[in-house]
Length: 392
Image 1 (tube, rainbow, N blue to C red):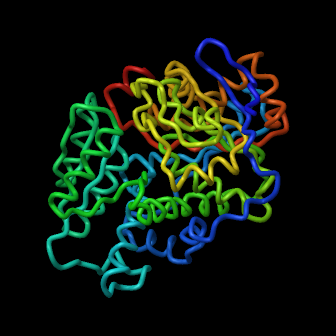
Image 2 (image 1 turned 90 degrees about the vertical axis):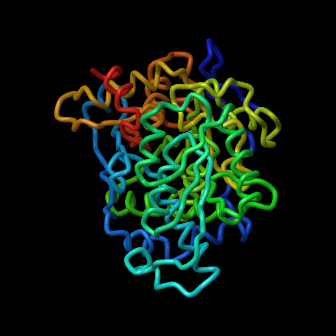
């Protein structure tokens, strides 16, 4: 049964009754891509590759009453303001490597120029689509990107800047996924999607595996113990990577918290639905655009269900306040530029620490004055005009 830690207004936190008490013994098919030895080599073949900062925020930690706050700042990834190209670049490499002779992974993006006229396509709320378009541009390929109605012009133009054709459809993200699949079948395009469906599973697994580089960087940048990690939700691709990574020997004690918008809580609602994937009941209209996803990715969900400890949903106001907290420096803390989806994890931590009704959740997670908390800030100012209005 689901244990309600707090339910009130619209925010809530739910402990996971499906959390396995022992280190997760993953299904071999699900686990194999994460353990590949070529992931980081592929990323290092990109001239723009450099580890993104892991930032320590002691003044913020004092304000929130926790021991230490670490923020993985993905605003600096490849100059694209978001982490998503880690997954897209690795998946495209694997797709080509399965079909033809390619350079070794450590030289792939420096040397490989595919023949033919392949077209890559995807559906996106913004960041993943830009990652796919960027990879296609590097390889001299066409890209077709499908986006939901209401996508802000800045995110559309950032994708077009890489030569992609953008189609803004009359529907939400899930409708864009369907339209993308229909058009790919009609035109013979190759889908590079971070969500999966029956018959389309391998590439989403490669995308999830591509995110391992982020966690390897964190391991290199911080040798201490992480007690709690806050991970953004969405379709669950990044959360699945976190689930696998923190099930490795030595990391099993790390508590994992998923953070989603109230209006796009497909992971939390799936826990409430007996652990089976469920379409979110909300309108998918949060300001956290990158998390406006209605259905968990089927290849991601089992890993998340087995490993995460708590599922949270937060209001848009929490994410906006977190953007301001990051930017308005406290003490000697460095300034962080974090977008709406990027700031969601801090919004979750602030909500958890700021409401007496979450005492049980804090106790379960061990969020106290001794805890080291990891936050993933997955994007920078991907909508610059809105970011300026929020933080200044």
